[in-house]
Amino acid sequence: MPRSRLTVAFLTALLSGGSVLTVALAQQNPTQPPAQGSTTPPNTAADDGETTPTPADASADPPEAQAEQSSLTLVRRSEKDGKDRQIVIVKSGTSDVTGVFAICSPQDGEPEDAPNIAVFSETGAGGVQITIDKNVIRVPLAVVTQLPPKEGQEGSDGRVEASAGTARFLDEPPAGKTDRLSRCAVEATPKPAPDTVIVTQGRTELKGQKLVYDSSDGVARIDGPVTFKRSSDKDPLTGKSDRIEVSVDDEKTTLVGSVELKSDGGRTSRAARVEYDDTRNVARLYGTPEQPAESVKGGDTLRAGVIVYDLDRNEVYAEKAEGGTITGEFIDSEEGSGAATPAAPTTPTRP
Image (cartoon, rainbow, N blue to C red; front, side, top):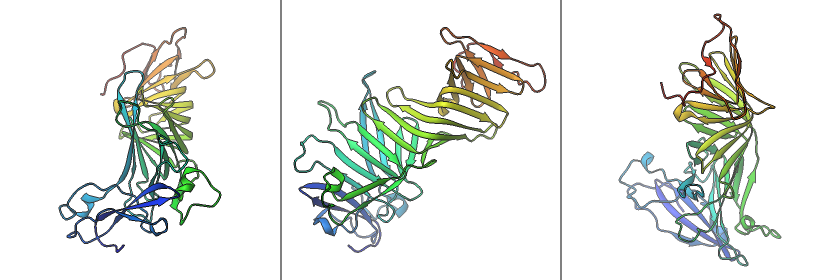
C-alpha cells in the first residue's frame, strides 16, 4: 500500500482458522479520504500496524491533531462499592516501524467465550501507556488478556503483563506451537529490566521493572527495585522501595517493602509501606514491629505506628496505631526542625 499523508487503513488477517486484527496508520495526501477496511491473506500484512481509526475528515485538521492511537480498555466492577473503574492501555506511536498492535481472538478448538489477547509494543519515547487510577504508566511492551463481559455489564476486566521487550508479526504461525499468539502469527518477547516501567503521578515519577495486573484481586503490582523522585521548587524528594501496589478498587498507590524517602531539606523517612497520593501532597507511612515507621530530620526523630507526611511542607505528624506507641527524640537546637509532633491531626490539606 503506498505511503503518503494521514490515512488510516485496516488490515484483517485470518490465521489458522482464527483471526488476528492488525491496524496500521499510513501517511497519505490530506486531501484524500481515509481508505476503507480490507481483508488480506495471512502473509501479505506488510503494514502491520497500530492504530484504531476514528471517523473524521482527514483534511479537517493539521497532521499533529490527527495522530491516531491504538487502545483497549478493561472495565473493573468493584465488589466493594459496585462502581466501574477503567484501566486504559494505549499505544502512543503512529508508525509500524517502532511497534505493533494486534488483537488475537479465540482460535479453532477454543471455547467461543475464551478471552481475547492483545499485544501492544512501542519502542518510541511515548511507549505503551497504561492508566490506572491517578497513575500513568509507560512501558515498551504490554500483553493484555481481556475476559468476556459478565452478564449485564458493558466492558470487561482481565489481566495485563507489561515490561521492557518487543513484539513482531511473523510471516506464518510457527510449526508445532499451539499457544494463542503463535497461532495468530504474533510474537511477544518480554525482557524485564530495572527502570523500564515508568509510573507518573502528578509531580512524582517512579521506576520499576515489571507490571502485572490481575482481575482476581484488582491490584497492579510493579516489581522493583523501585526508584522514586518528586520534583519541587521548594523541597524535591527521592526514594526507593521493593515494589509498588496499585489497588483499583481502593484507588490507592502503595510503596511496599523497605521504603525510604529523602528530601533535599534533610528529612529521611522509612517504613514498611507508604500509601502515596501526590495529588493531595500526602504520604502515610505504616510501620511493623520489624520495621517501624520513622522520620528523621537533623536531631529530631519520630517513630510511630502511622506517620502522616505533608510532602509540600516537609512536615510529619504521628498517629498512634491500635496497640502501638509513639516515641521521639527532639533536640532543641538549630539542627532540629521542630516540624515533628506526636499529635494525631487530620490529613494535611494543600498549603
